[in-house]
Length: 429
Image (cartoon, rainbow, N blue to C red):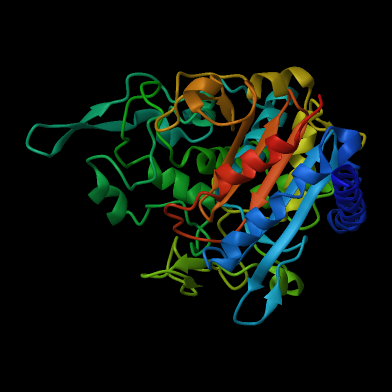
């Protein structure tokens, strides 16, 4: 009787997942796969659903979308909770999210496409494209809490920007905060700015850097600057360049800096934790911690560091291209050797992430024991400020995208449980 019970359980899980995966594949525009044929135990994979649902039931998230591909086929997809609690709109597989710093990998890809064509080299100095950056100064702290301004020790290169070793922060740290704040340049949010990104980048050059080039890994405006470089080199806006060179070839139909009005209803609402528990809708406008001006706004500044909106399906197509060595559905964006360079570690461990290095646009898993989480050496990924994450595992041929809209997100452990839930279900190579 026990064996019959187990077999029935497995059969029901198989039937459920097969029908469900087929439905989600149509929604995402990606090919479906049968979990058991792609090395996943359907019964163990089904454990993910209640785990992800628990964050909604406990009012820690309004909703989420998770998407897992293996060998380019969907093995798991879920849309849980609400995209807009107040309006009673459920989350959908094609809900649109602010992906913030997940923009960085896409813009890094744009830079590498121009590198391959000979339009630029990543060893080039930034000042070749923005002469204002030829005489940058660095804030050197003094014992009394002030700082001296000293010249940069060498030119900032495009590779420095790709690896976040330029010494440029977000105007939120270091001793020269006052200068950045007075210039109106602080934080990663650009959707409310009424000037082109190139103008902001040129103004930025007059402000004190946090460190000398090549000395530290400092998270900051690096990819916003590279987005402005793309505009200079291509002669197009960053939005037009990415649309022509990446979004259209990959079939990323719902990836934008600013939403067309007809898609506004699919944009998930941003929530924030409430004191004492639960979540509430964050304010409409006012900077980084707001809904953002992605529908109604100036639509002039294209932030290469944190400005894009996208869906799980669109972003998975981009990541699958990287896993395929630069090609997706017959469209080649980059060569396999360029992808290899982008996904190789260029640094030592990055701050706060033991066992993790950094490539050209992605973090890189170098030591699983030091990192302490499931995965594979060589895995690459990153995430976004609105509580989203992604990774690509080349060893297991996995692509994972997980999107939600919560800021800030203190103490929530859904990322680690998602990771554990996926890898405990992966039972065959």
